Length: 286
Figure 1 (cartoon, rainbow, N blue to C red):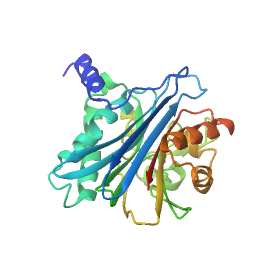
Figure 2 (figure 1 turned 90 degrees about the horizontal axis):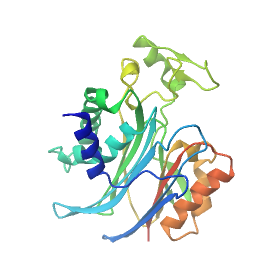
Figure 3 (figure 1 turned 45 degrees about the vertical axis):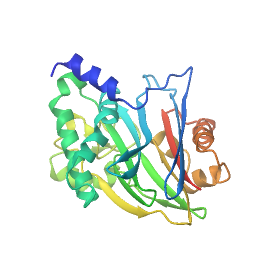
Figure 4 (figure 1 turned 135 degrees about the vertical axis):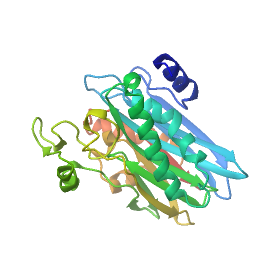
């Protein structure tokens, strides 16, 4: 498939467009399930010397007599093409897995690997960059399946108490694995650990030049939604670099509108001097 065709199809299938600095992107959705679920999002471009690299998915849909909430944050690096590709195709690949309804953990793991292979195969058109991802699939308002590669993060609040649902894949934490593949972890150049001195996460989609030393294996967790569940937050590391999990939960606990809550979190991160792109989704259970 020609590069122009790939990019055109990505644009057609994308759920949301990339935000611009002049007009931060904010959205809100509302859908009733067995529990009342509302969701909102906000994106704002950072103050670094590159174009916006974050994008997201935040939607509810009916599928096979089930109601699904599809929520994801994609934080690109070295360009936004891989993040755009994920935005267009990752959930489609997950839901095409024949055993998704029976074994969602295995289905998601296979879909992550399939999507990464597709990205690598199309690196001629998508470029040499990559993207982190955190995805959350809400099934009938009752079961939440969260997967991630990289350092975009998902947390859940139950009666105001936070629980992290994803794992930050930091190079230092996976140093032995990286070295066993022939790679190395170094703080030079810069002041944070990087795979082969280049990438500040140990797992990501894409990054063809680093793939021998870089994993796309997702961590996956299943969390049941009960009467104590307040909301979930998904956000890129532009938020988590300057706010703890509990600070984020406390900051929006009394904000009922998820769109307003997501915007509040992004603005608070900017107040705390975050210079990175910030994308945030809040899903509230009422």
